[in-house]
Image (cartoon, rainbow, N blue to C red; front, side):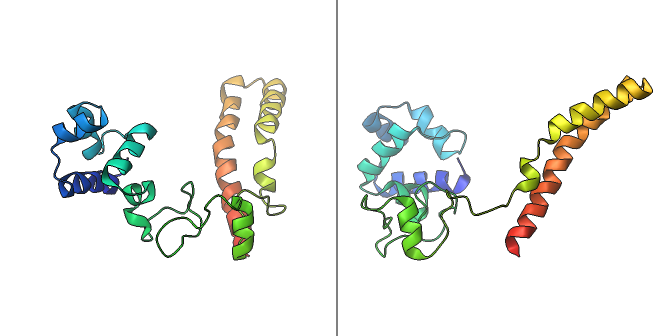
Length: 168
């Protein structure tokens, strides 16, 4: 849990006039659990988030994302376009892909073409084959393992290249 959400939980509790003990009793958890949430040491589970939103009479979006005022992360579940009242415009009548299509934006769940070619390359298999070839050819097994260190480097470079391709 991030500090902003923890601060929001403290703010909502105080705004509604509850002590940590009272809040814990109302939603069926320990006072220590509430304290950990408010210090961002742990996160409430889904059931507790729902209980908090019902108790405070606010949506989960308002509880987690400051009322949907733009601070909601782009990759959050349900982070699609919002209606003027702060709720998602997807009221169950459209699938997420249809909603994105109606807004003229590409769906994050759809394949957008031939990007990610470098990431899709089975580089670990190539590195393993290269390891054995170099090891048998040179007899230097103790140094050939360094080839495996290139795997994360390869994928990092591949992601950078793919991101640059997306921008073009």
